[in-house]
Image (cartoon, rainbow, N blue to C red; front, side):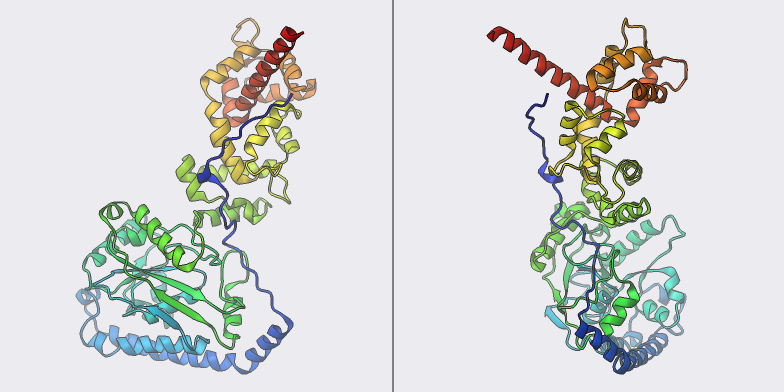
Length: 503
């Protein structure tokens, strides 16, 4: 029999408004294709020549500014003639590069402030390598985070070094800690060092929302100036994210635009309160809310970890979107680590339809090795949070954490074991397992035998409580299924008793 149940739903775990911020497609009309051909032949070569010329000039000035510095000078901010003679010219050459790239009139709103007012610049949404152009419209050239290997790149290496970046050394396990330490040291000088520019989302999106901000820019607890980035062309050739056109395609198609429209809005400086200074997560969240309001877009709890899960889903021949679960939210609400999520995705992939990335009732039953029954249907509906009659990966994780795991405890397992163990012998025979499972779930003898062999690790024709418990840990759904069956049985018994009294 079926019963009406109130399905619990936590508002904090509802599906995000933007399901996939990591996908972007470019669809060119016939006339736009003609434009690409025309620009590629007649305009883009000239643009590239002018960009290269500006890069060479900027490189020469950067090399001159960095020349003959002592070891002591290399550990200090660039000052004196090294900055006075070259800094403004290099910034203007950077703007010239933007111009020749097609950004002829970058619109700047708000007032960029110096590092003495806001040591940190936080820019969002981050959707393309072209976001780096923002550095040429700040009050002075800001420093950034860069891989140490980039300093050896021809031409670009010297330009990067001129900005005095914070170098990340991936081979050093303490690199992250050292970066945070140096970032805090520079920020606390309030004006001595250049501003540090950070893209706190940590990866590129399609600008449909703001995903989770990393704590790095907010860890020092100093004022930050948020910068909102808007690309305003009707044809978006800029977005370079995980599912869509590659970097070269974006670069070339953007060069083929007649005019690229970019707006940079420098918001008022955000001064953290005492609580935010002590809690970088809160600080980052509040700044993100301000920026999302200004941009007029929602924010979600997707992070780079969702990208990693998305790539893992593709490896399992699941749709990319199967891995998009708002990892940070589920991690904070349910306490599940990334490694655990990875394991659950493997498990989910073994159960689900390969083409749809979801689990049907039939597949759920096959995974548990039981026929479809009222108890299984009720349990399935608890997992199926949106009533789609399928379970996606996000629903599967939440269902395991909030529905199955809480009842998969020693008390429930002991009660279930006692139900099977006729005579309190301390073990369960195959005949006892067959009798209960046949009556409760309609399982045939072959399915019961298969299940018995899986649980009976010692292969001694009897299941001990330890074996029973070990198997239950691997499939916590059994505990919930058993409890649901027991509850339905009580309801049926109560109804029959009421009917007998009425008659």
